[in-house]
Amino acid sequence: MNNITKICCIGAGYVGGPTMAVIAKKCPHIKVTVVDLNEQRIAAWNDPDVSNIPVYEPGLSEVVAEARGRNLFFSTDVESAIDEAEMIFISVNTPTKTYGAGKGQAADLKWIELCARQIARVAKDNKIIVEKSTLPVRTASAIKDILQHTGNGSQFQILSNPEFLAEGTAMEDLDAPDRVLIGGDSTAEGQNAVQALVDVYANWIPRERILTTNVWSSELSKLTANAFLAQRVSSINSLTELCEKTEANISEVAKAIGTDSRIGPKFLKASVGFGGSCFQKDILNLVYIAKSYGLDEVADYWEQVIIMNDHQKRRFANRIIKNLYNTVNGKKITFLGWAFKKDTNDTREAASIYVADHLLHEQADIAVFDPKVQAPQVYADLDYLRTREPAENKSGVTVVTDPYEACKGAHAIAILTEWDEFKGYDWQKIYDSMLKPAKVFDGRNLLDAAKLQEIGFQVWSIGSSI
Ligand SMILES: NC(=O)c1ccc[n+]([C@@H]2O[C@H](COP(=O)([O-])OP(=O)(O)OC[C@H]3O[C@@H](n4cnc5c(N)ncnc54)[C@H](O)[C@@H]3O)[C@@H](O)[C@H]2O)c1
Image 1 (cartoon, rainbow, N blue to C red):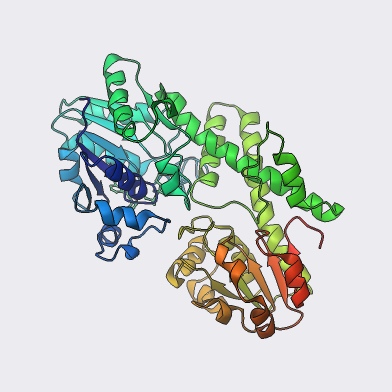
Image 2 (cartoon, helix red, strand yellow):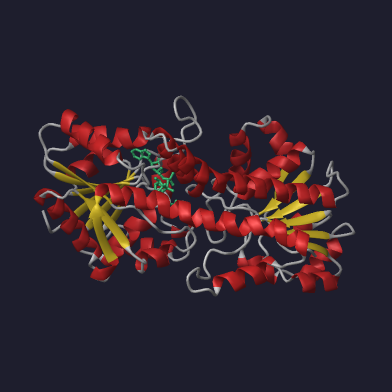
């Protein structure tokens, strides 16, 4: 089955959507159908106006506009798409379990299992199943078990092909990835399946960038790649507090560390903490896996990355409170940014949510402006924490669609996301409209602190003693 002509992807989210759009663009001879149970999401992917597609990612809407209806299709008819496809990507969500054994750490594989059962029920011929979701090591054996015991005699090969794209740069990452990782069985059938997927990627990716391994190495590499990246963020963030105490400057320290070629300059940007749907869930999952093998020291080692991150978010909120004379009760604090990072509309696990929650405990009035996040999402994120009634979140937080309006009458501005446009704002105009002393808490070290001070702002940048 080496010449794949029909692909189906189950899950039209932040991974399934962009990944399949790029495959469709690069492989016009392959018909790509992306399916999802969520009708609203599929309707948005099919919106005639491509600026309404549900995932914001620079460059994505152009690719969707080009390929949609040609060889890229979005549908809720999961069964037909499974039936038709030779290769099925599973790209559904795998969040942290919120109930039962492993609650708060293990990955919830409910949706993965549902996919496997549905494929087994529908498939009438042999198929290659590709794990695109990030999964605990050894998940492929569970999928295989379900397919073999509930299917109707069709043969399945399970491949692991984790996705390394980063939101905000997904299209560049997919266009020219550092590497593509494909894990498969060592049997002849397994290797044939691996080759079929290699051939798909080889349409635009140099062969030497396509790594092939066994299934377990591939599954474990994705989980641990995220753990290493998150660890770097926690490592640099752990030094911000020390810099603030010692008059060292975190940006200078990061540069000095990063110019060592053994360390490298990337991912050394201090911040209010990492967010996003992946880092925390994947490390928790790693911690859980280590514990389940009785490897307590390994589990503790990685858990510390999360502990540091939680500390950084709380510390930022506490810093605001302390600096506003130990009370924020009834004070307007404006958040610039809500998304977990720039160039995405994804807010899952964003630091802003936790900082807001902490400040709401202290009865602050929060105004939020984000270029790509709308009010319902902000309230949904806060309500999801279940720390207070939705009505209280509504009365404590106002979402504003104009940044100048958001800052008017504020005691302080907190930068939560590093959107480039914040740098270009008319900061004099903002200053003039605020209460004095006008304060800026820069959780991303985004703004030019000296310039703001010249205007009259009191500025606190994370990791610096000013
Ligand atoms: N978001 C990222 O940056 C990123 C990067 C690399 C890997 N991953 C991994 O990829 C996976 C997907 O992440 P995401 O961010 O795209 O999630 P997402 O929540 O944006 O999308 C998942 C989609 O799957 C759909 N779905 C769930 N069960 C289904 C079923 N049985 N049938 C049809 N559709 C179903 C959901 O409705 C949802 O739209 C996760 O395992 C994640 O860890 C994510």
